[in-house]
Length: 87
Image (cartoon, rainbow, N blue to C red; front, side, top):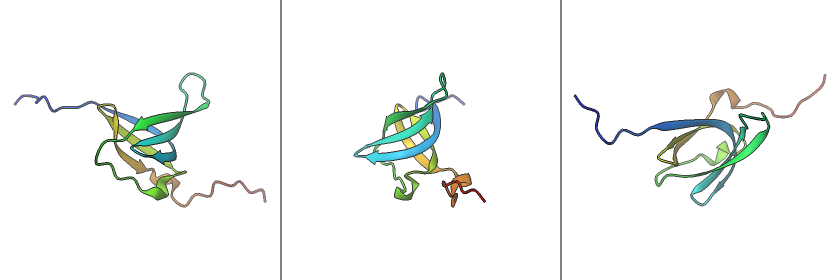
């Protein structure tokens, strides 16, 4: 059994989906060096479907061959209220 040439390496990005443009997406991620938020612009693969309700939510993006193959909303963020209230 041999490894075929169709094997692809994947990279994962976790961040907040900020915007979806024509064949592109913007994800806010934490900069590894400074810890500050930075905006990462990524290209989308041909057949990627993105739930429009994921905008503003924490997501995980799978990048294959330099393009986003999948964006999924992280389940821990569903229904979370982003406003802080003091009681």
